[in-house]
Length: 235
Ligand code: HEM
Image 1 (cartoon, helix red, strand yellow):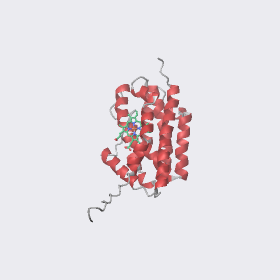
Image 2 (spheres, protein in one colour):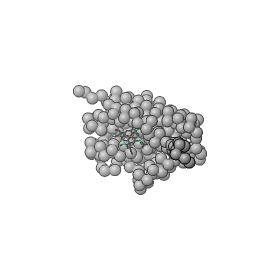
Image 3 (cartoon, helix red, strand yellow):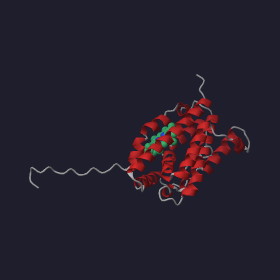
C-alpha cells in the first residue's frame, strides 16, 4: 500500500445487545428508581404495611413470569434464560408474605385470600402473560427487566429493608432478594449478558425487545404510582 492510499478504517464492532438494552433503558431506570413511592419507601418514610403491599404486587408479577417460564423452557429464544432453579422467586415471596401478614401485620395465616393486585399490577401481569404466550422474545425483555434488576439494585433494597423494618439479615421479609442458588452473582450476570448478546434474532427484533423492555420499566413505574397513591406521605 503506498502513502497515498487511505488506510481502511477497521469496521467498528457492533454494540453488544446487553449494552444496548442497558443503555436504552437507562432513563426509565432512573425514573423507576426515583419514583416517589420508592424514594419514600427506601428513605424510611413509610411503614412496613407499604413494604408488604409492594411485596404483594411482586407476587402477582412473579407468578405471571414464572408460570410462563414453565411453558417457555424449551423455546429457542426464551428457553436459555429460564433458569428456574437459580431464579424462581414465588416461593420466597410467599415466605416473605407469610411473615409480613402473619407476624408483622397480625393478619393470621389466611393472608393469601386477602391479596389483590393494584390496577397497574394487574395490567403488568397481563402483559407478561400475553407476550409469554405470543412472543417469546418479548418475554425475554420482561425477564431481563426483573431478574437482572433483582440481582443488581435489589441487593440495595434488601439492605435498606433489613435496616428500616428490622428484618433478620437475608431472613423472612427479604427472602425475595436472596438468591441462594446463585453462588457468584457477578458471574451469573456475566453469563446472562452473554445470553443476551447471543440472542438468535435480527436487529429489528432486537429493537422490538428494547421497546418491550422500556414498556416493562413503564409498567413498574405505574405500579409505584398506584402504590404512591395508596401510601401518600402526609407532610
Ligand atoms: C430504588 C430502586 C432501585 C435501585 C436502587 C436500583 C439500583 C440499581 C443498580 C445499582 C444497578 C447496578 C447496575 C450494574 O450492575 O452495573 C441496577 C441494575 C438494574 N436495575 Fe435497578 N434499581 C432500582 C430499581 C429498579 C427497578 C424498579 C427496575 C425494573 C423493574 C430495575 C431494573 C434494573 C435492571 C434491569 C438492571 C440491570 C442493568 C444491566 O446491567 O443491564 N431497577 N439497579
